[in-house]
Structure formats: C-alpha cells, structure tokens
Image 1: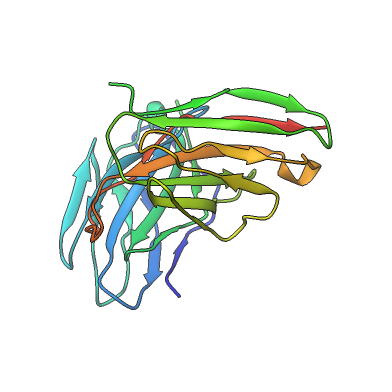
Image 2: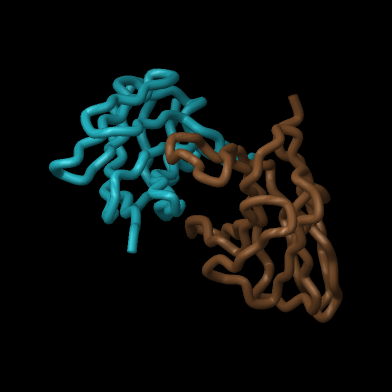
Length: 109
Length: 117
C-alpha cells in the first residue's frame, strides 16, 4: 500500500542555518503531496503542496519539489528562524491519506 | 472563521469511564477523520466518514465508536477507557464530493489531550 517515509529527528539547528527534511513515498497511483507543520500545542496546518510531477510548492520561505523519478518531496528552507521550531509531517493523498511519522525541528537563537 | 473545533481541549479519565470527544466543522466538508497522535509517533487513523450517515474504520478503531448524523459533527466515543488510549486526538475535515480530487488539504482542529489513569 501507499506509504510515506521521512527522516527521523529530532533536528536541531542554529538560526539562519539551512534546513532540509527528506521525504520519500511509495504509491500505486499519482498522488498529491503535502507538507504540514504542527506548532506546539496546536493541530497540523498545511505548509505547502504539489499535485503533479515537477511541481514546486512554496510558502513562508519553505520549498519542496515533487520528484516522480526519485519518489521524493524533500522540504527545504534556506535560513531558518526560531519561529520555525515545530514538527513537520510529509503526507500524500492518493484517494487514501498517508502521513509520515513527523520530524521535530528545533531552531536555537 | 472557526474551521474545525474540538472540545474539550484537555481531559483526565479514570480507567473504565466513558466520554465523547466532540468535533464540529463549519466548512461544509463531506469528509471527516479522527486520528490519534502518540508521543514521537505520527498520526494513526481511527475512523473516518465520507458524508452524513456513512462511517468506516481506520487502522486503529478498537475501543472507539463514531457517528455522523450531520455534515458538521463527527463525535468520537470511548466506551471503556483504558490507559492505552492516553493520547492526543485530532479531528480533521476535507472538502470534496463523491468523486473527490486529491489536491485538497485536510483541516485540523487543535486536538484533545486525553489522559487515562
């Protein structure tokens, strides 16, 4: 069945560092791919999405490109801030929803 | 602009008690979901619904029940609380008709933090 695998955390960075969180997927169809972010004490909220191969989703300085050839959707941000500290979830929708385990990111001032 | 609202936010139960976690959405979404999130783990689907009057089991349904009498509400019932049900519970909704697309994101509530002692 469909599944999502994302890099294990926790990840600790200094402010202004480069962040990348790896995400790979397996799917039988042509899923849409999502990154969600969960701030402490809150629910998940959509960060960005891509609906077909080679699409790039972007939001709040984060980017991810839908790579069908490598079945990947890695999340990147060039310069993180303390406010980016959160748990990040990669997810896919192929008429069935699948989530990765989440990666905890802590950014230190 | 309420979105998905969950109540209560926190609850402590004794083993064997029962309770209902409430979830309501004001976006007229057909699809609704209940997940549990255990520490350091991802989301596990408990139950879902594709519309009023229709519910189905997810991957971890044991010990839970749901109903969907209206489009807006999707309550989750714990009948005999057990320590293994200590978790954070999230309700989510998704727009779409009978043949929904795959490009719509889920909208999540802020969660109910449940401890069973």
